[in-house]
Length: 108
Image 1 (tube, rainbow, N blue to C red):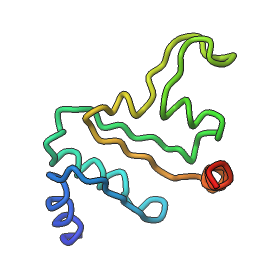
Image 2 (image 1 turned 90 degrees about the vertical axis):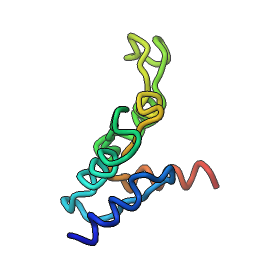
Image 3 (image 1 turned 120 degrees about the vertical axis):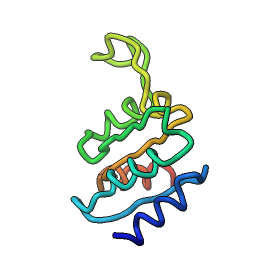
Image 4 (image 1 turned 180 degrees about the vertical axis):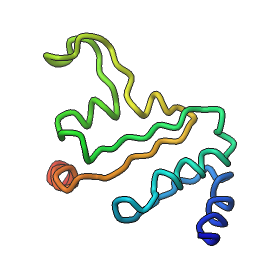
């Protein structure tokens, strides 16, 4: 645990993208929050999205937002997680296998 906390203190000031991996329940989001809390961006929002719980058709809207009328249930404009996390930390948990599969097929 001390090694993990040492890594948190090393990477927190960084502007680099940090990938945190691990099994369900191992504390990935806690580590992401610890990095955020010890970073220069601490005054900005920390936005976590559990993409594994989202149907694939809602993933794009959740991440990028939408405008009113873009689809049937879009009754108002909504900022996406990336826009909300502007200058902040964005954490996406649990990339679902179906999402990975659809992204692989669309971009080949």
